[in-house]
Length: 430
Image (cartoon, rainbow, N blue to C red; front, side, top):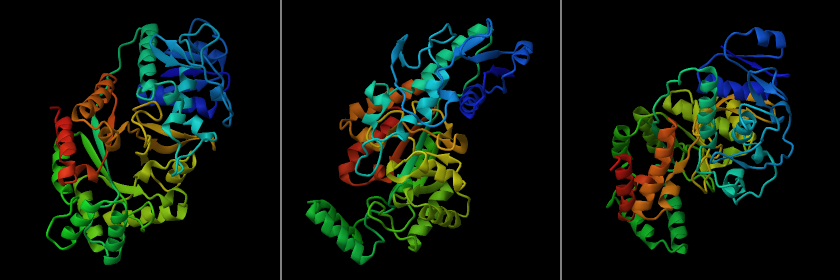
């Protein structure tokens, strides 16, 4: 057992130390403010405070973990042997900065509790983040810090390296609508056709007409073929399907459509399937509760995972709401407008609610790369380079590699053939 001494043991301290020593290192951990108990402990131990108690492993505390609320904090970065770091220690310490407070700042999304300029959907954009401003958004910075901390810790106590699982590729697939054209009402098909006309998408109008007339298959209808392929190429795959009433940003089929219901049931027989939380539900608890209950009833399984449609996250509201409705796993921690690590880590972590000052039961699974980010590279070689850069980085850290696609990735039409071919090669390591 590892014993941690702190003058005052606050919830933030318990949270972040349990994350690293418990979840990441697999150790039992205990806390104390009693000096005599700390001295008497014969196993590994460290002190966390203003000054060391002796010659123990000591990390000087910045103060963030003993505070409450979210007052503005001045962040000054410095170089730690090639890695950016902040909260430097003013006294002699086993680390040159308060690694635990810095990790807490990034994982809790502290900066997103402060006023920001939202995009047109109300989202916090990547360019406003500390990570983007200081060019470390592409790095799982906390995991890189942890690797160094672990080496220093093991050298101090002369212990063996912990056994770590190899990096695994996981795919999450958003399904905002199961069909591009089929199974929609005449009125909706006409309205969407008119919209295509005024946006000069004449090819879509022609395609829609042929699909509706039964001459051509729906471009999104080959999902099942790709499910089989993905199950062979990845360690895990899970689907998030939009199943809610029609809205401006939620364009799925009707929840009363029998084909829609049957398709969702069929997908859930292949792989874990959960709701894609609707845009409207991001601000309406009643809608989210209804959608989750309806989805669980449809697939005959309790809903324990979720992903937010269009990644509309508002802290702590969104995650507090998920937790209150019994959700255990979220896959929304990413930026819509940039690849990278929104919480500066690739490893799952429990979400800490800064409003209530407590750890929630919700486990956050960070996503670092999505279909949009890959497509934005435009050329096949650049797409492959982007994917492999993230994969190589996470493989070295034994970290999860979670990539988000949509069922549009598997669109069977000619305009998507090039991307589909590149995606297949990437997943096949060709």
